[in-house]
Length: 264
Image (cartoon, rainbow, N blue to C red):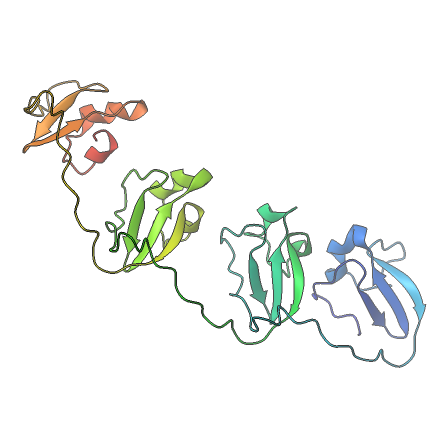
C-alpha cells in the first residue's frame, strides 16, 4: 500500500511511494510513521527495496482472536495497563508488551514510540460478548463498607462503591489513600473483585482483653498519648497505633474526623 503518514508502521512493514518500495527498519521503526520514505537522503527509518508496478494481491487481514470475536475495550490514556493487557484502537487490537509494559499507560498504540509498548494483534470489529461478572466471595455474601475518602486504607482492605467490591492491592497500596476506586488514578491501587448485594453479615464485636475485664481510661484531649496507649470512648476501646502515625493520637481523638489516622 501507499505510505500514509501517521500509520503505526513497524519493523519489516513495506510501503510504496510512487513506484518505489521501501521497508521500515526495525532499528529505527519509531520514525516510520512520521518520515516519508525517500525524502531524506540518509534516512535510517526506511530502506529502499526496489521498483514495483501494479498492486500487491490482497491477503486476509489478521483478525484478533477468532474464538472470541470482537474488540477489547478502547485504550484509555493513564489506565494502569500491565503486560498482556489487550486494548482496541481504531478497530485494531493491541497487547501490552512485557519489555516496555511501563510505557503502556502513557503511550497509545499510535504514539510515535507506541509500537515498543503495544504489539498489534490484528483487526477487530464490534465488541466482545460480555462474560459473567465476577461475584465477591460467595461464601460470605454482601458488600463491605462503602469507600470513604481520607481513610488510611492498607493492602488487603476491601470497600464497595455502589454494588462493586474493590480490594487495595500490591505495590501501589499507598494510592488507596489518595484515590477512590473509580477516581482517575484509582486503578493503580484498587482491584475490581466483582459485584455484591446487600451487606456483610455482622460478626461478634471484638472484646477488649477478656483476662482483664473493664475499660481503660476515657480519652482526654489534654494528654500526650504515644504508641500503644489505650483509651475508651463510649464503651469502645482504642489503641494508639505504632510508627510515625502515632503523632496523630495527640492531634485527633479516636472518633474525630481524622481519628483513624492515629487510633485503632
